[in-house]
Image: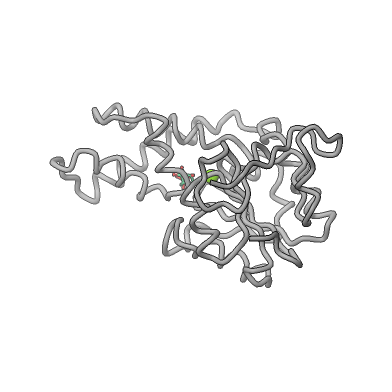
Length: 237
Ligand code: BG6
Ligand code: MG
């Protein structure tokens, strides 16, 4: 699929795209899983990326189907994980933006694109504030009002509607498989961030946001180009 022409909006995920909070979620989930005697590693964590808090917990608990949990117990576990996660967020600041993230936001703005955040995290507004990038967004989808988590397209469709831009004229940027699936189900162009071949269905996969350019052509600059150091376009899986 070619880049949208025109491209009028760029919709970013947060955790793992603009900052490495994906790792903090991993640490907090692993601590919870281990305290329950349940296995947890990086590979399992990939399945949780982009999935909301209760959905992630359900996947972890499902590893031991013989054990039953009441809704009250599940809520208590989710609250415990979130408290741990929020403690880990304590030291977060502008220096924790991932390479190229700040530049990507200013490049999109300078190119006249509308910008939205599509994160299912209830902590997203706090994270944006700590990173000092709240004002870069024309719209931040309120995760508390979502009916369905990624891979459902709801969050990306809501972002596009709030920006007043048709999905076909939007680029979505994601680090998680559930997020790529959500972008594609929304009918948008999907930019994946991560290892080549790791994100099925992405229209392109970049190693980082360094040199990210929302308009067609510029992103094709080779990794060694002076205009795009560090930016690597790799073949979609
Ligand atoms: C997503 C993360 O952005 O937010 C998930 O990829 C996380 O790992 C989800 O579980 C929900 O976050 P929170 O902050 O509402 O618990
Ligand atoms: Mg993410």
